[in-house]
Length: 359
Image 1: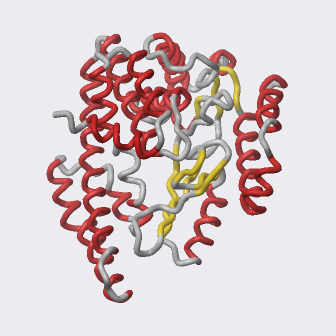
Image 2: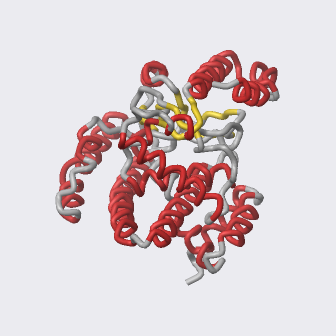
């Protein structure tokens, strides 16, 4: 990591009101912040400019091809999609691990509402992220000891929301091409518009930008077959998501009933058994026995596995409608999204809901 990277990083860190973290967040939060800073410093120390990496004569051929694609996509993101034109995704970091971060999600044993944690950078979010898998597992074990349902999920990429120049990560390189392109657009969208404490808004907006960006990219490349394949994969994912949302809603209805703890536990177990059995078999039959979710469904499932499924897709149709109402003009669309972001939370939720009720 060059001195300029170090200077920019530490200027950002030192500008934070660290005293307020100590006074308001407590020692446990301060420890988490320090771990997060250490993890990000390690990531940045592994970061090198793309031109420097591509100049290596013995660079793996597949990695070279993927990084060359990333250069083109990154340029396209700013020129054609009007996403932030900065140094994010113009460098590369080999992390030497399968995921960039591991996120811990937790719920009460008879609730599908995720516990929230509040941070300086991103406001309140429904998960807690760790750069080291063992740290995530240790935190999850402490929560499980409290009797909570927990889930530890790896993420291939994350955004610092423009605080720093995010690099391309080795954890992203094995993604299918269209998804790889979409991740770059998705993470840059977070840098463009982000509302503290509103994961549904942030993730739905970024997902719509990723999908629209991939569509425009392949249209300009004259390869709409690749986009159609990507769209089919998204439709399959959305169908699986609907399966999980339906289960989440059944669990929520169950937990609202006045039952004994023993009866509630049996009913909860029955709902998960039905999901993993007959419901999943029917879902697979609709998708020609697609096996991409088999390993996920084979693990022991609990509330925490379903706690975020409604969060990350909830406003997708609303943003799609808003883009259509903008005539596909991204500048107009971003202005409208920015206006929504500035509304009070309930007004924003109402405005997004009304967008899909106009018909």
